[in-house]
Image (cartoon, rainbow, N blue to C red; front, side):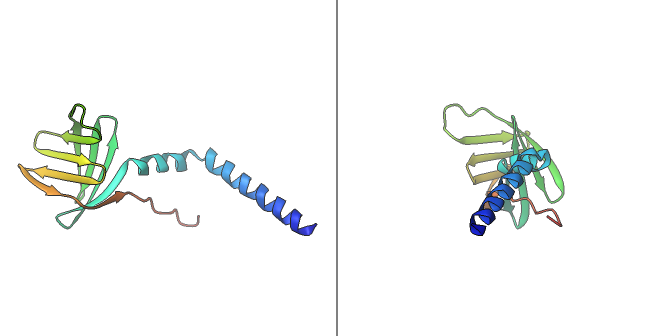
Amino acid sequence: MPRQCVLVAFLALAALLAACDALNPQKKREEELARNTFACTFNGERFVVRFTEGEARVLLAGQRINLYQIPVGATGSLVRYSNGSMELRGRGTELTFIVDSVPTVLQNCEPYATLPTPGK
């Protein structure tokens, strides 16, 4: 009988913790941002890109760059963003960044992982 009580208490605690996570809007926002954000390497520098509605927001060497979506027609998951002097294009985590007409394949692109909050 005590084993069953422990199991019921554990399941209740797990359900309570899950409910708290569902009610935490900050955590939900961070998870949503992480789903649309990728970290890569560009010429040895960290390159972070967040895809939003119609934009790709890039953080590179402390510089923020906004690129605007260019329609690519019926090409599946191909993406293309530009601000006139820079362009980002590719599919999935296979991205190329073009500066001054020089294309560079971004390396090690993977979904951005948020750092855990201290004390949690």
